[in-house]
Image (cartoon, rainbow over all chains, first blue to last red; front, side):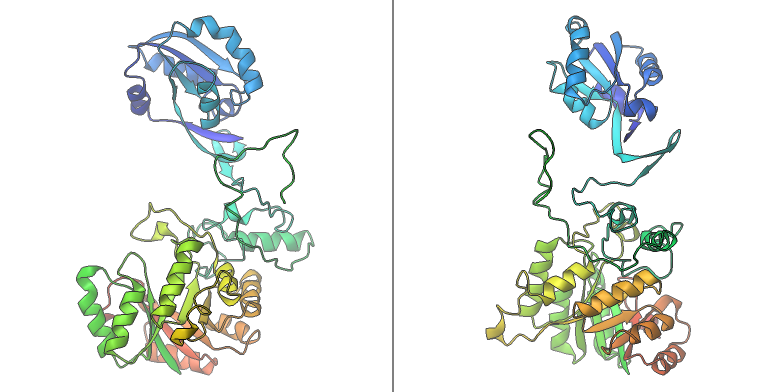
Length: 217
Length: 225
């Protein structure tokens, strides 16, 4: 799940200030779950942009998927011709996928936060940094690169004094958590050693091509 | 027993006070210089070396440098004759005067130690042999005492750490079982009521020395007292 939140209203208003006729398009996927870009949020934004003419509102299930997007855009093709700009309530990926598919300015109403777990309504947790070199098989299914504020992949950092994280003293050090989980699951507690991430592999923008993402070399 | 003081290099207006205090104090044999937004630790180490005979250590952290910058830093230190280095992951930017700075931590301290010790990429030593550069003398920091901390200490030992800095007497006892390398007890200046008592305890526990950590960029005689 891509976690997102609505931008401050003033920022949204400033971004659409130069346009009169707008379309507002929400995301029926992640942003709807996050309550940042669902039908209700689209309606709310429409109300707050009272001085604008909102030509139409629309919901696309997954605007980040070009196949779905192409199908949905055919349904609104004509109405899009009547707007000056499109305000999109979707994550950065959704906004950019949409923007690359239409010849209208696309503005975002959301800030994209992180890929994360939905704990409950409006409560989310980051746990994957999409590094492309997953350690989960060695760390009891807990990612130290994401859950440690320093991203230390080799044991607790030099500054940890007890079981708590020195950056967030309210939290347990992820390496202590990993240790405990390994013990409770009777997994081997031999501490592995991991090389630093290979950033050459992470040169942006990343993409995979072919029938499926091929295994890392 | 060796007495070290660890300071963050000062901001420009505080350089003179800081340098004078270090040069004049007779309470410490060695000084560890850490950069945390202050002046260059290498530059300060070079200047200090001209005014006193104290042993100079650099503390290099992984917080704000990627491997390219760390390589330059180590090579420059070697050229400057500063081959005693304490490496650490480093205090997170959120707890510094630059809380909005990007945390780097591209390498962790273990990765850095491995790279230095395996000379890959060449961290100065081989290239500098004509200058009679000495081999690196690398210290590492172990904060806690959990199984994970001890596991990391074991990895540091196997990677060739030359000295250990620990955060407690209990950790000192544990690490002593892993290595015969020098172990120093690091204590925060702000939390140390009776330095001579702490010194005695460290000596009794078998520490090779004690490291008084001053957690600010400002160093004055007041702190040392």
